[in-house]
Image 1 (cartoon, rainbow, N blue to C red):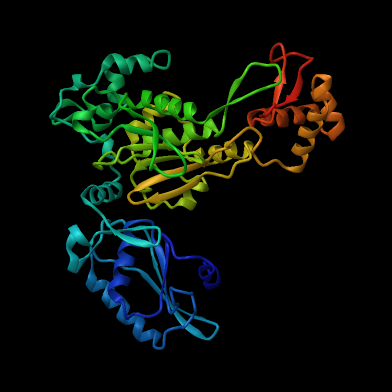
Image 2 (tube, rainbow, N blue to C red):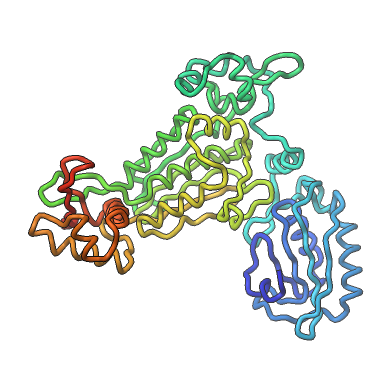
Length: 456
């Protein structure tokens, strides 16, 4: 990335500016956090307040000094790439760090417990014990939910519940449990894995008291006044439907369609929020304590939050572009075989497409504290989604045809100058957005017409 491109960005998870080496302790902390998280670039010679390019006076001396400081201050040893770049007559030090295969690193003088840092947004945060172990597991290509629990009898996994969920999908027996890694062989004996207990054990809360979903419907835009709540402690695959039903219940409005009966319409892309709940269940860091998965419904948005930062050096930009790394391999495989999740890496694209279909902005993805959050905007009432010019013309034509009993797809196609198939696609989206309603005897009714939604 060029200096111009770096200067055009704000400080964040993978970028920081420093004017000089005077605050070398903070520089060491930043580089340690970069190495433990997603890597990053430190640009020295630039003011972090306003990104004014000052340059460094003695680049060769500063380069050598910085290399020595890093070598003496970080453990295991960290070897960054340090380059001197002349930009518009000023020398800059560009320090690049990649996600390290020796993670977790720590600042030597602070010790492993206090000096292991991670990058969250533009800040360096101290990693707690579960996160330090998570960093080590990822480097060793181990998954938390694959670890054995030898102190627990395999019968703690509810065979009946598990086999019932897979009914019609695959043959179920004890070997199936081992192939899905719900159980594993440990010191010559069959023992449950963490994933097996999390997914199908009635004793899950005993060992993982925070592996549940906390749902709340709040009045307004903050959490000061709660209207409804639900603590979902079902088996994880079933908890998905429970959380989805909670959101559906609190994000539907009653729309009146002429003489037709009232019908509930969603004010949020339900496919997208279901995808987000699935992701939260599959990617949650269940080793954390005191942090259940949270679903919060406000007047203007839905937030779905799970404990755990992005794993394996991922950034928000990676997720948006379709890059996916699985934190919990056992839970992920079971959800995949139960058809609760689709192809890896395509979740954000599907969520974004669902939002666009309702005229809503794409979901906001962010790391908050040691959690990951997806936020979806709501349509407050029927017809509040943003329409493009062509869709506005379609809705206007349907309103003009209301007194004649509505407009047919053929009529609308001829007026707008579109194929019938293209018109049908647009009409379907307008129905989902709450602008219009189809009047029909059945889905294949050749005399189907469309009417505008009657609003109070």
